[in-house]
Length: 130
Image (tube, rainbow, N blue to C red):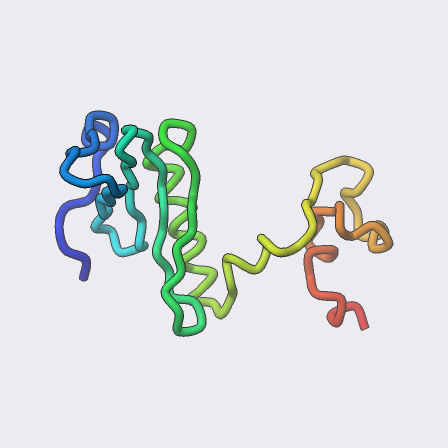
């Protein structure tokens, strides 16, 4: 079980870098998803998550604060954690070509242009079509 207390919106809004070191400081959210608030010496804040993927501890950035709220960061962290527990790799999509959400690519008949489609069948590996 994680140590400490869960982060609160008030804490996240008020926290500043302590100035004790030149490194980023990380404040853990004690809900068990690996979510942390990273505060840099310039007092910029961002959300990161530590996840075990295939036996390796990986760090994933979830976005800057306040653009990504505490609630949204927890939701992203929970989705990543569920993906890993289900045997998935939340980092797998980062290496694929950039996808675009568009009405013209919103059906399964767009397999020829599947690098731009976000529909469920086009996101499946190509072996599943055989």
